[in-house]
Amino acid sequence: MKKNQWLVVMTIVAVALIAIVFVLLNQDESATVDRGDHVSIEGQPTLGDPGAKVSIVEFGDYKCPSCKQWGDTIYPQLKADYLDKEDVSFSYINVLFHGQESILASLASESVYEQDPESFWKFHKALYDAQPDSQQHDNAWVTVEKLKEIASETTSVDLAKLEQDLGEESTVLEKVSKDDGLVKENGVQFTPSIMINGVMLEDPFDYEQIQQLIEQDL
Image 1 (tube, rainbow, N blue to C red):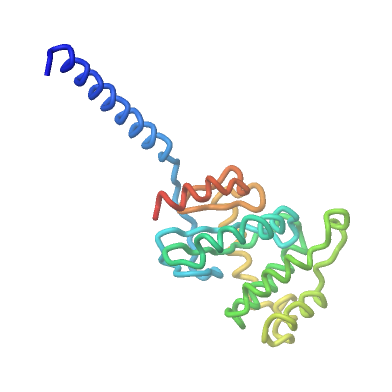
Image 2 (image 1 turned 30 degrees about the vertical axis):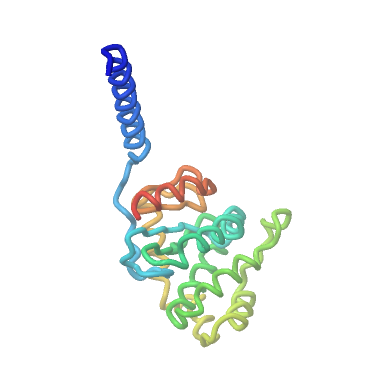
């Protein structure tokens, strides 16, 4: 090989190595995220193995229209891509931003989870499905009778016990208070808020970021 050809080859190799290093450095930089402590999911409704490599948590409010939208649009993609497989779990934590109706719905969900955990997610979805459209959002719709009606259609809970848990003699009030504490502890400011292994998403509707965070930890 002539000297000039050798120099050309060496130049090409050097450029290729520099390009590879540049790409690797950029990948490392893009993969770096600020990870806090992941919220405890002990005692929370959870799909999948609570000890999975990737733990996804939704902080949601049954009175929140955006939570309903997230459940109708993002959650089905998440379930199809990840939740029907191993190594990824999904948990739900109640948020009480919309006052008394939020509290009532949270008490109902905790009562259902305590009495009939296998039916929790069916009740959970039906409760969001019962949310009125945005024009009637401010109207009171979370009532004891409505919650009993939804529970009777989706679960096998004792309705008398459910009604008791919606009142002053509730046995699940402590669980709702625990959720409220987790909301404050983790600085949740809007619903839905989505946390993945300690990372709180800025935009819960950014499915590409959700996938990126999941794939990094898988």
